[in-house]
Image (cartoon, rainbow, N blue to C red):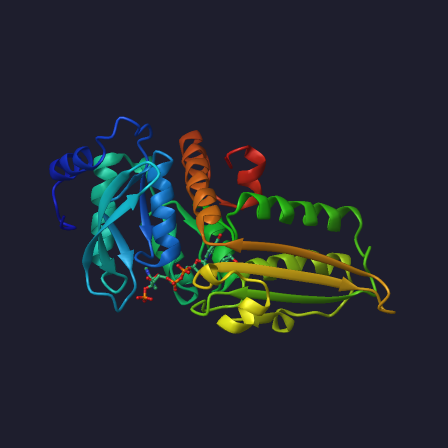
Length: 312
Ligand SMILES: NC(=O)C1=CN([C@@H]2O[C@H](COP(=O)(O)OP(=O)(O)OC[C@H]3O[C@@H](n4cnc5c(N)ncnc54)[C@H](OP(=O)(O)O)[C@@H]3O)[C@@H](O)[C@H]2O)C=CC1
Ligand SMILES: O=C(O)C1=N[C@H](C(=O)O)C[C@H](O)C1
């Protein structure tokens, strides 16, 4: 597949990769960030949930162009994807436009699981290309990200965590903070999070949870106070199973009273990445529905997706 390929060839290409009788949706997803683990898990979940993968996607700037086979062992569906380095934006842009001509403007969306350093430039690129997107990548300038997408009236789901139950917990915390602001005033906060040692940034989820906890407590806790574990032995000591060292997210937050007599603790511990991948594919379906409804685009959160009932 070449970016300048004709619309007719693209149509044939889509037919050849989407023959499975269980394919039920005409939604084509460009999953950017493969062969990284999270993007790959999301691509597999897309296949599992009846979405199609575009034959071209964006990979890291230093990766040689290559073609990979995405295979979902549950549905036994597979799809070939050519990965183009993010430095070759013109080629990716030509592919997106070809895909839209072949599949319909509203049927091509993107998922981004790349690198914190790429968040803002990738989002700008999706806006330029009029490509609705689900941004799972954490980090970057989050305010600029959300403001830019909203100002462009572009369709996007942006969230640091796509796991249904964690999103539900975040929604509950937001409600608690709204209903009982300052309920934990004078309590001190602490947060420890452990992730695989390749993780580039502080957990975006931990930052979001801290934002809610800060509405409940008057502690002057900052993101710099989050204790990060990126070491295998420390992770094991924190309770991470050995077979999850390469992919886990263990979080523990505490609120402790001034005299130390009372402590509240909140934990969410995830081994592997499936739970986020499932939520990501559901978010794509949610976004595709908003596109079909028409109107102006905007940033949706995963709480919006949860409230719509779209998280399976
Ligand atoms: N929202 C959620 O629920 C979740 C979010 N995440 C977030 O997802 C992100 C990715 O996680 P993970 O897969 O573990 O990270 P990795 O760093 O292991 O993989 C990222 C991949 O993206 C590639 N990449 C880097 N820059 C670009 C770019 N500009 N365009 C396209 N691809 C690029 C990298 O290539 P190379 O390294 O070769 O340059 C690599 O293959 C992180 O920010 C993480 O916090 C993770 C889990 C859940
Ligand atoms: O990098 C990860 O792995 C994860 N990143 C997200 C975050 O930064 O909060 C979500 C989850 O913690 C896994």
